[in-house]
Amino acid sequence: MKLTNFKWNKILLKISGDSFGINTSVVQSFANQIKKVVNSGLQICIVVGGGNIYRGVSSSNNGMDRATGDYMGMLATVMNSLAIQNAMEKLGVQTRVQSALPISAVCEPYIRRRAKRHMEKGRVVIFAAGTGNPYFTTDTAAALRASEMNCDAIVKATLVDGVYSADPKKDNKAFKFDTLSYLDVLSKDLKVMDASAISLARENKIPIIVCSIIKDENLNKVLNGQGTYTLITD
Ligand code: UDP
Image 1 (cartoon, rainbow, N blue to C red):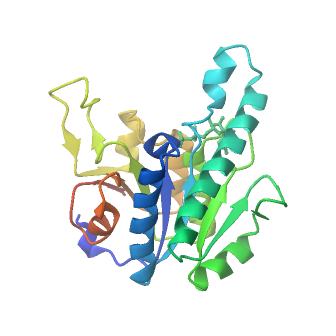
Image 2: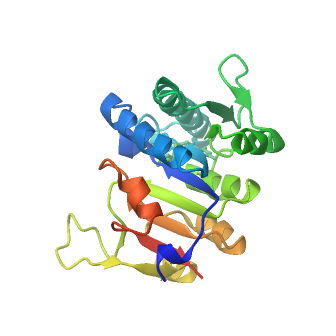
């Protein structure tokens, strides 16, 4: 199955915290790529991770209460969302940040119908604070928001250009999958997205495209069926 077989109108881009780390040039490159997608007429919304700043699970191993650590992680995603917003607004792209945890002086609260309206008007909506609940991840937030916004696809931007059989940095026999089914990902326990995110995408029949957008232009290439990626569908 090739990506050129699909026609997208609305996509959700998931950017993990690790892939940008508030490095201004990386954030700027992401913003440039997103601007091109907006200019091509696609509606786009974004879920940003927070792992570059704070991860609840790791902190709970160091004696921090898990739920407290998770709330700190969610606040970290708000910081990353503002960084992306700032970079895009500088390029003249209209954006709104909506947070699952209300922080009214900084951004809008998450309101589904309002987010949809923003997208219809060509604004890029950045969903911050994950699902708003501890014990979840921003991958699950991505699958949830993609379902709520009726997105045609989830683009999961990672540090590698697709899903591999093993860590390509550690194992030279590791190979990249071109396509996978949701069930393959779950049964092979491939570390693409957590099981709740995969199950939610599967239930709502939303294809997941795993790729890297570290290189300029990659996002547009992938959406046009070029470049390298792994496609996860039924
Ligand atoms: N988090 C949470 N609930 C959510 C989303 C995120 O509690 O719905 C917390 C959790 O502690 C997580 C942190 O926020 O470790 C940062 O998110 P994540 O690890 O998913 O970011 P990424 O790996 O994409 O950078």
